[in-house]
Image (cartoon, rainbow, N blue to C red; front, side, top):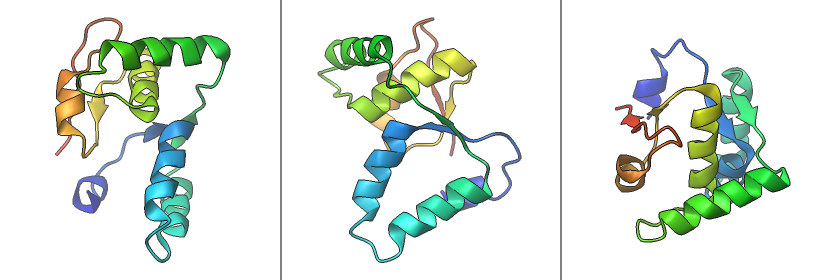
Length: 113
């Protein structure tokens, strides 16, 4: 993924749920959480917070809709954020999920490689 990010000149966007999940997974790696925090800070990543009650309901509905894929809360927030900012390019390791998920406007995601 570092090779993909190096030439990138656009705005990175994520959600607080994705950061929470990433910090958890990186907690097993020495220096992992700090490296993530520094990357987010250095790249001026826009962090979308989707914790309002209506956001939670929308995320839960998406998780139910895609339960066979499955979709977790962090994935659901990325789908909601994509709708809000109008971007469907995504850098993810979850190819299966994001090949299946669609925005509320039925737009597919384009997985950046």
